[in-house]
Image (cartoon, rainbow, N blue to C red; front, side, top):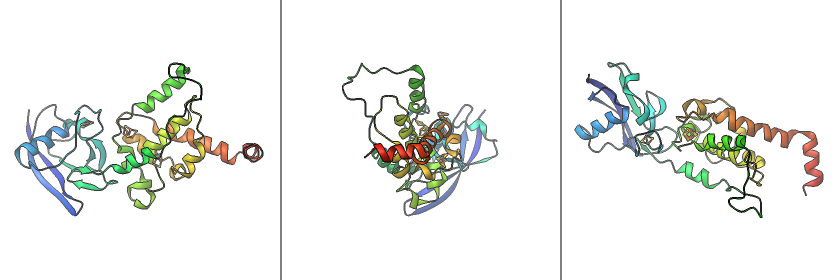
Length: 248
Ligand code: SF4
Ligand code: F3S
Ligand code: FES
């Protein structure tokens, strides 16, 4: 059965804006994105929202619903009471372009800063051999849909614009970890993770893991193993001495 839902949607641009209230029809089985589309169709044709797949796979429709970072297309209306006001705001960590659409180019910049996979020389495509356990580890990280909800949530940059330069965010620290733990990758990424990508700023609060729509264990399976490697390489006195003696 349909009902009249209460929505509060942030509208504005990089010049500023505010919340606007709407009463809008909601039908059984709908998700928040359906209701946003109905608002566009019936009341606010110029309401800006980014989306593509409506299936939780393109990572485009990231926003905040009642203050929680979520995908608009994967949040069912049935999780809210019929008389509850549903507040939809853009991701807070990235600059607003218009209404619910943010400029996520920070993330693309961080992606470009990570040196690509460096396989051993002399081994051609098709000749790589890996154990299943290593394949599965990469597969978990590869489920990422690049929604950037984890980066949006991480407190290191959420309210600290000044940290953006030195912190790649959980999504890209996970990429560094994926490559570092790849048995065929020959680049040394441990120092880079700490010095360039800001791994030391992560204090493993796990908020990134909590919001990941793909349920990737970002903190446990990527960030903590990476921190352990940093500790081994940087602070183990024997490794330190070995590096001094043999790595010139
Ligand atoms: Fe989104 Fe999860 Fe990928 Fe982060 S790791 S960008 S939350 S899918
Ligand atoms: Fe941020 Fe996730 Fe670390 S939320 S502090 S990157 S565990
Ligand atoms: Fe593709 Fe929501 S529209 S993830």
